[in-house]
Amino acid sequence: MYAPLALPDYRDLPPGVRERFDRIAQRPIVMDVQRLGRVFASRNGPVTALADINFSVRRREFICVIGQSGCGKSTLIRILAGLDAPTEGRILLDGKQVSGPGPERGMVFQGYTLFPWLTAKRNVMFGLLAKGMNAHQAEGEAGRWLDMVGLTPFADTYPHQLSGGMKQRVAIARALATQPRILLMDEPFGALDAQTRCQMQSHLLQIWQSVDVTILFITHDLDEAIYLADRIIVLGARPGHVQEIINVPLPHPRTRGHLLDPHFLATKARLEELIHPAEPQGEPSDQLHFPRMTHVDDSVF
Figure 1: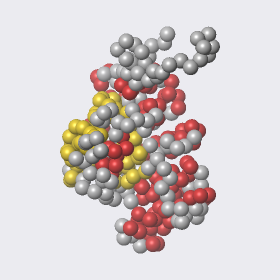
Figure 2 (figure 1 turned 180 degrees about the horizontal axis):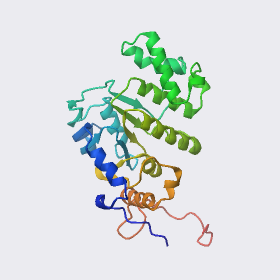
Figure 3 (figure 1 turned 135 degrees about the vertical axis):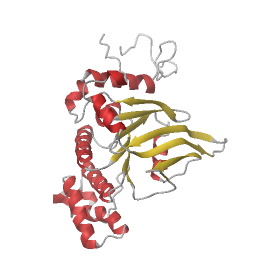
Figure 4 (figure 1 turned 90 degrees about the vertical axis):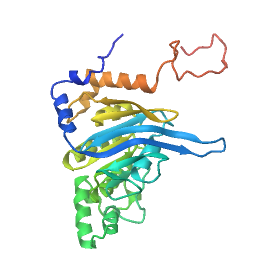
């Protein structure tokens, strides 16, 4: 049976990869999350969704956050965006405490959140106009960002005339047009088909390479997290907490060929261990327990 490589220690990262992390470590911290917690009220008493979350994100770093369903990933990103308030702890953005939404944080959701009555260009212009930019300047800026995401021919097209991938590219352009310090993305490709999802991952890496922006990306897809991220924050469940932070031992820029790299497979194996641990007796943790409803000799195996 094939056994992947062990996930390398920081000191044993492949040539060029450790040097990249050393360069990242010299960059200023954009976002600092300190002892973050969130408790919700319920009929049965308080429910702790997040507890003692601590991590920092440096300028132009790409961070992915993964974890089991229900571990608080979306709650975390909503708090980072200022759409929800923590029960305890704080978030610092460039050293200043976050107390609500702000233009220095762009947000892209999983669902298609474009205004259906506005064209692609007008959707991208929306945030610029809200910031006080005049219409002529906003139109020029919107055109520049639509060109960045490859949608100039569709500038005057309405959302219902666009594919899912195109809608998300417009959403990314709209979020980036206001030039945020950090782009927050909550499973933005989760509703796309597999082929479009791969294309969007490639588009996002190209945009990130060209734009001065830091990205924090929520996903449940292990391959996606490894393919995109510099570091992966693994949240444990009940309550959500930082279980481990993994340096992805792969160089940038990445290609689909890296999906078969032994270090890619080692990283995925470690993530599987963390997110889907086996029971002490060796039984898979996702094993269902219910009585057999077919004859013993009627087996599909």
